[in-house]
Amino acid sequence: MINRIVLVGRLTKDVDLKYTPSGVAMARFTLAVNRTFSNSKGEKETDFINCQVWRKPAENAANYLSKGSLCGVEGRIQTGSYEGQDGKRVYTTDVVADSVQFLEPNKDKGKQNSSPTTQPQQNYQQSNQSADNQTNYTRVDNDPFANSSGPIEVSDDDLPF
Image (cartoon, rainbow, N blue to C red; front, top):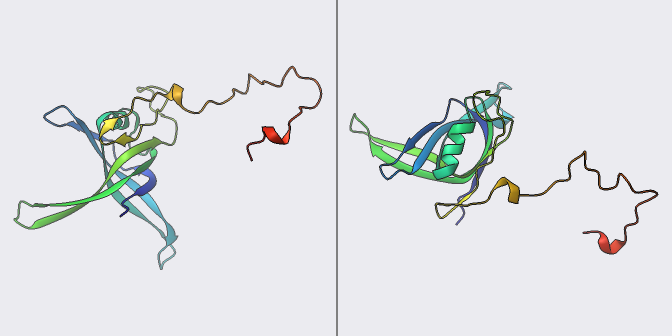
């Protein structure tokens, strides 16, 4: 069975960060996700999807995301229910995020300038990867071919395809 979901949308309000009695961070937020099609009146509609994220990614989301932030969420759908104050059963549907990707720079000057990406959780244990261990890119100002003269020789054996 498969229960995976990938969403891209904007936060409808700031992230709500709370801690369990044992000190585990949990954040809730609502993501506004535009539908890819128009309704019968030709208007685009939006779904408002409740999301939650746990542990360090929850703290990162609360620190670096705010109302209007564009982010990507990968996770699973979880349903539940509880008895409301009026005695009626209330059903809930949430996305429990394994990963939250920050998709635009942080515009809030009061927070740090860079927007880290939260790491996926595996069995609710935070991965200890740092941004330094991710893909290495060549800086534009450090051109490795700047001092070479003539054409660059590349054999078919050097190509990855």
